[in-house]
Each structure stands twice: as structure tokens, then as C-alpha cells.
Length: 206
Image (cartoon, rainbow, N blue to C red; front, side, top):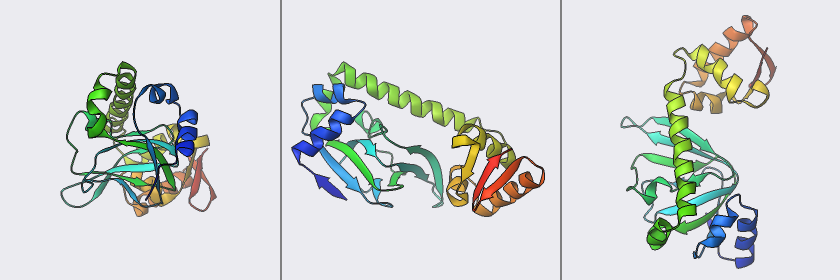
């Protein structure tokens, strides 16, 4: 992890941000944080609560269950908020965010600016929009088809670019199954003519 306080670099990232108008209206000393792939962006062990906006790269958000297993909650790319829930509630002790690739975020400490944030209607509107989108995504996850085959086909239809699944292990994580289970389903779907293998770990809907 690297923190960057160079004002020119910070200004450049804010200028290209989708939220630049709101960020410019806030009297906050922003800084940038860069993460390497695999680094934890958020965890229960961090002492400082940060609000972060993903500007480059992507993250995986997951829950650690009581039995130690990981449960995928979401993914985030450019414009994704981290820390929006922490503005209103204490941190959830079991939720983690991990850099899926090299990552750059616009950041600031929540506690230092909380009162000012509560008085900014434009900022609160952004937070409401972000939280609503997350609730909608979780609701959709809970309503996913029951069988793994249905989940795989729905995932390819609605979540994959060009209806093409790429990466067995990564996809298995998002579908809450093992790589072996996913591969078996894909083999069955290929035999049934529902999908076509187009490369290593790559399948397209027919």
C-alpha cells in the first residue's frame, strides 16, 4: 500500500472522477492510496475507517463466515464506494475488500469529516444511491435460480461480457461453488449444446 499526497496527482484523479463536482464542493484533504493485487483494502483489523472511491482497478468484497469460509458479496470497479456504510454504522467485523488487481483510490478518513459530510446534501445523495445499488445487488443474489446449472447459465447471460465466461476459479468464487462443481456443470452444458468451449477456462453461450 502506498499513500500519495502530491496535490497535482490528487487533483488530476478528482478531475477525472465521475463525482468530481461533489468532491470539489467538500473541504477535505484528499489523498490517493495505491494497492497491489491481493492487498486488503478493507478489513476488520484496520484501525482507521476510510472512505475510498475506486478510480483504477477492481476489488472483490467478501464475507468470512464463522466456519472460516469465504462468501462473495460483490465486486467493484471504477466509481465504486468503500466506507459508505461505515459513515452511519460501526464496521462489520466479517467483511473484507481485496484488490483484484493494482488499485488506486481517492481516500479520506471518515471520522475527521463525518459532521461535514452529514451537512452535504449532494454527498448524501451519492451515498444513498450507492447503498441502494448494493441492496439491489444483494437482493438479486438471494433470488438467483436454485440449481447450479441455472445459476451458471444466468450468470453467463446477464453478468458476462459477450455472454462469455472467463476463468473457472474466479467464476466459481462468485457463484459460491467449487471449481470442480463448476467445471462439471460446464462439461454437461457443453455436451448438451448449451455452451461452447472457446479457450482454456473460457465458455460462451450458444
